[in-house]
Image (cartoon, rainbow, N blue to C red; front, top):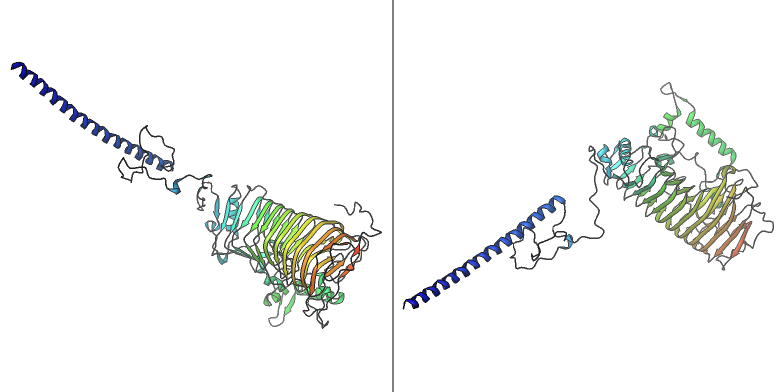
Length: 564
């Protein structure tokens, strides 16, 4: 019996100890599990806190977790540990390459480096009446020091800016001029002194871009009203004779009348007169002021680039320039696209785009309406490609005038294609003066649609924008001039080829020319050719029988005087 009681007591004690151990073990695992969850949560919170300090996303996969641990969740989520990890939001998935950092904006008083400079932060008012020239100068001075910086001209403001030069050559490269507002020119003569050749000028820069949806307004009407005696007349005007032949639009003036006009103009500009009503001498400028004619005789170009590399102009509108709207001089690598030029068709000498001594030029997707050549290509230009341009009103697209004052002109590798011209004086034209030298070669005019154009195809080697010009023997040599798929309607003459007697035009080819007459009140003429040699590649409408096939028998070898 005692043995039996002893065995029972031992078994009972063992059973009790086993139960106690099981209960203790269960409690220990539960504590461990809770402690594990708490540890993981704290690790996630720490990581999230660290990522906030570093500006990183906690879900970007850069953190390392303990083996066997589940993927961490943002602290705000309270899902149980057994729940699957949520998907990473799309906005948190890193892209390649990462988006650029937010644009830095200059606050006008900070000392840290910045990439954007708003003209308003430099004191510009943008009210259309306060002179904002100094604010633009100050913003340029700041942007000039920073590579790839941006000057911001904000929308919904109108900035009155006088003549200004945004100059290098010590500026950093790739500056952007973001034009979304409107820049207007002063209309008082004091702002222009005795006259300037440009209003807004960018010189000696590397990688300069003008872009935006804004407008450059030259307010040129105050200049145009004074141009009656100052401006030359397009020489092709002499070919356009109204049917009544009594009144010509802007006719060339005879020498005597021209001299009287110049004398009167001189008198009105410079001689003092007496105001008898007030018994005091007064100057002509006061008289002209009373008449609203106070601007200098030298008219500025609205926007000019000089001596610059990799120039881009896009998106903007240039309107009502006193003279040429957009000019590139001594530039290399020029891109112009999606801009508009707008001036009345009778505004004098308001070329749309003027190229001179510039190479590697691309102009496309642009609307040009002006009072002179939509695009003018001058000496020193090569590798110029123009396409998808709308031109009109205006005087067409011209190479020249070249060789004025016995100068040497060199133009080569010019392509003009896919152009629409409406209501222009000329279509595609080459114009040179007598007495010049050099050459024009490698020119293609292709797929030009003309509508109500007076003179669609022109070569004029007797160009003269004065009443008379001296006859001279030497001339700029023209060769390799190709016209193809020029179609539409003309109102005066379909083709006018007037080449030099001493140096005829050679290698002129005509392909798929279809030009039909449209009577609009002018005397109409058949095609005209003089000393023009080349080839008709296809039949033409109308027949251009005046073109001489082949080469001139007496064509002299080009001399050093002619070569470029």
